[in-house]
Image: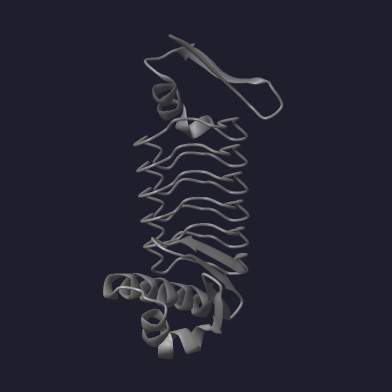
Length: 204
């Protein structure tokens, strides 16, 4: 089928006969600078070392995509679905990841300098050696199995209860018991507290 990929200004970026849209993106991955890929379905796509600088990936489905070593400088990834995506060594400087779903994503050694991670879901993400210099992560929001978790600076809300993160680490189990949380729920929310604390210390 004939596939056409446009850039942000409406100009044709690439075109030709391909098996699918994903096939077109994969075969042209070194030439996707400024590409308009909004709402693209790219689950499991092979985008290793792709040139996606300034690409428009708002609401794109990139679940389990291979983006190792990809250049995503200044890319627009607002609301992108990146669960389990492989972003090891990816270059994400100045990228906008507002509301992005990064659960279980591999961000080891990724460069997230100046990236906007407002409300990004980073549950269980792998962030070993990730460069978060000046990354905007002031608000962290996690949708737990029971209550919403919201972190602003050093304070964390779980449901309607707000405490300093150090207080949660010290007395979270007691607060959970007082609010009828099960042991499994307490363990779940404890993992969120420690994940937020790890990110907070990384950014200092």
